[in-house]
Amino acid sequence: MTIKIRLAFLFLFISFVSKAQISVSNADEINKIKNTTTYIAMKDPNSVIAKEYAAIFQKYWTISKIEFIEYSDIYKYLNSKSSFLTIGGYVTDVNSHTIYSGGRGFGVDYSHTHIYLELWKCSDKFLGKSQDAKDFKEKDKTQISRLELFTDFPTLMMPSNLYKTDYDADGHIRNWGLGLFKNHIQNMVSYLNKGTEKRLFSEIVNANELKKLNKETLYIPDYIFTKFNMFTGDESKKHDTKDILNDYKFKYEIVSSTDLNKKILNDDSVFYYLQYIKSSTDKYVSVINSQTGEIVYSVYTPASYNIKSGDLKDLSKVIAKK
Image (cartoon, rainbow, N blue to C red; front, side, top):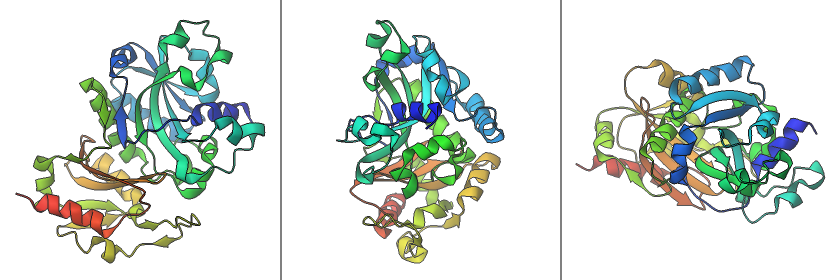
């Protein structure tokens, strides 16, 4: 096992419970973040793919200064002048030492595993101590914001694989890609600039935005039709698109994730697209403004593993309201 992967394990699993598609916590720490350099950890910041994502960061991350580092470099910057944006996660009710003792990294229970993009800093308690890197523990992190990631099942079972891929995650994260990532960063920065705590586990309905879908097309990425077998983890089958969309009464267009990412980056007009996230056994169905990244609609459902026709029916009813 390489040093990088061992380091990744340290930042990947902690044990607490929280439910949010994107959240802001510890709002009193946001001003401190603004005065730090935010270090963005990657496998190889100099790779062609990483530089494409770095360009998105440089254009849309406006809350603080940024630098790009390798995972193994994080320990070098554990001080009051630093914050970090890393892919992390947690396993609820599971002891991380038990999971990874001996560096095995297998046997993770998917029903307890959440993976997300996380903004954090060292806690004041840690900063008041010796600040020796070897003393740093998960409890010494203060989380500021996190965005849920929808990975494929093999990655959910072996999250450490993400640290072996480039920053595009080699297709293992479904709500990812340069266009979607642009909107993720815009949305996170927007909430951070508001300076208040945010838990999007609650319903969001922006009626003024949604009413535009009476006439405009809703773009639907084809990944949402992946059919997940909760018993075996099989994802080889697809939902029938007509069954899922039968009760959506407005215009829509099914597009590939590749085409949706390109459209977000290249289309100067405002359009809206559907986003579906399965985080462990939690489900989020949202509508996103392509220009601002704003979530204009979001509904959370616990203990649900797949998109359902009722999800689109509920959205259709909201759009139809005058």
